[in-house]
Length: 366
Image (cartoon, rainbow, N blue to C red; front, side, top):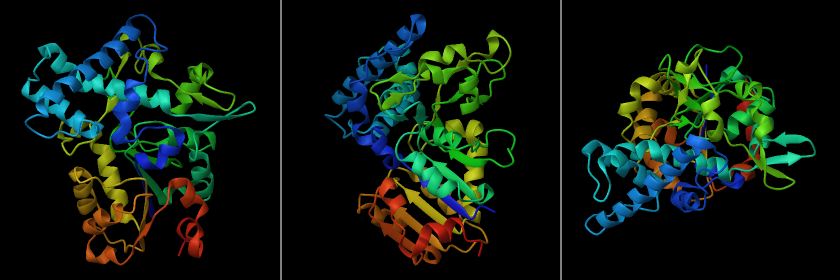
């Protein structure tokens, strides 16, 4: 039984340098396309950035007749998906229109990997702040079978922190992994790829990265910080035996309501998320603002939360107090009186323990 479900959004990770949706494209413009890549991979990365920003310029022309949030990556990604579906975006060649969504996936990967800061103390490569504290304070003291984490984030901050603390993540993409912690990445991951051999999603785990000596390819940016790029080395990784197992991706689902195109690939992940919500006595939300455009999660919660479990808490931790109204609109009468809004960041929430809530939620078996 999943006694507690933790939901993580982009706001939970702002302290580690990752851009938020509203300033993601600004950060992407500062990324040197293809940095760290070699040969054909460098050209592919550079081409992805070129196409995305060419598409963005084309969308500015559409803005004259219809409002599009051009500073919000969610809106731009959705527009690119629609442009591919319709086969039209003035100023772009048909081949460029076709490649817009995949180009955006590569831009997302490179922007996140370039901006997320991992920590270094002496000879230890630590997880990004505040994920090490998150795992040590909450996850390590709890029974893993009682917890599921639902995350909308593409990056590997959480997985690295779990790995650093000796905890294995189970993505629920294939067979169950006893003793591991369910990490349900509803929008995909920078370390999920499509295998050219078996055609399945092939997750690259922390153990696999270590085996491939990926941790020796850390890029130091100061004495106390480093970045962990995976993109430049994807072509060196294989899932099945032989060249036919080369990986393509990453598998990144657009942060929009229309995810049906990815249903067959991620069905097991979404089903596991619904099952966890149906069993949850406690739902803790960190840094997820429940944007009005995210109809997907609203339906996932509405249908997934149907079950026999009686909710004890639905707590939201977010520095933006306006988030409260959106969550109150989401919750039904049985949960509404168990709702509490805490205007705090993730790092602040870890230090905040009124009524010993951390011990009550994670250590009590009552």
